[in-house]
Length: 240
Image 1: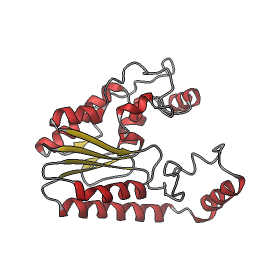
Image 2 (image 1 turned 90 degrees about the horizontal axis):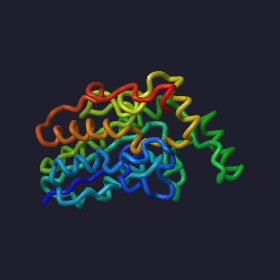
Image 3 (image 1 turned 135 degrees about the vertical axis):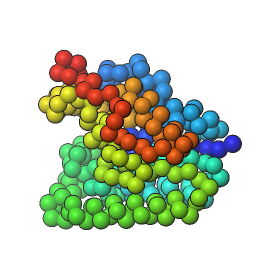
């Protein structure tokens, strides 16, 4: 029997994260996550096992390492989802792979003053959008090499941000952010809940839409268009 492998960041963490002490804490949508898009894909493909190597806040370096280490275990007809993350995340702290989103975590309460100073210096003097994009492209080509070298394994590159060769659009711009009717509502939402209360950063109905698109990619080689079909403007100023 085939297996579904998933590698990525918070867009692809498994369903059991809802009950994790570090997991979803908000009141919004707390009762509806009896499944998520990963589980629905596994059901649709009728795989014998689902194995997720995903974690909050990780970088593409971490995702690449997990994929590369497990690639030797991929079998014929296995399905592999490599969910790429934001190009500006980097795995500087080896023992803390979830601390890669430096600009968002600058005020982390557990970070020592010298660590904060080093991060501030990096963000001010060394961080480069051009370099981040070059590194991101390198990861894309590295994953494409893995894909081409394993023709009997079905591999999908699914971008959380940026672009990918197997999709139109990405999960952030076209799915997650589009659930808000405007930028102001989105900011009010994050001011209220702090940590995003939506498992995999999307409401439950869009989990099913994404699962259908991913399943069709594996079953029928249908290109994935993340710019259409999803429910948008779910969150308004009256419902956040």
